[in-house]
Length: 149
Image (cartoon, rainbow, N blue to C red; front, side):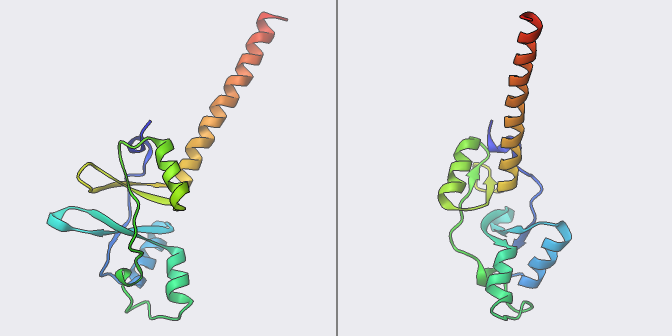
């Protein structure tokens, strides 16, 4: 199974020249803890960073900066890790672990944003797989009881 099969295709985005206040409003409106920061070269949507609710608190509110003036680009972390839609799930999870990130933008072969994989998505998938395995064990036990009383 690949990331393209499980990633969330409804990604909330913002451009780097927007204010932090606008980012916070989007997070509230869409009930998300992170927004993908994009550039639009040649009309495309290319991810360049991630802004999180924690970034807003630690970088802006705790330092008492003016959220109506500070832009997303002002606090954007320059290093961004992405995966392609063809990346295997275990590879993406390993990248998240190694880089200690909770969110990975998913891009197509040309680098355009097509989705996002979050820690919550990965945990949900793994929990469902574990439940399926547990059901299999239980089914095998019941099957044996029926055939070998």
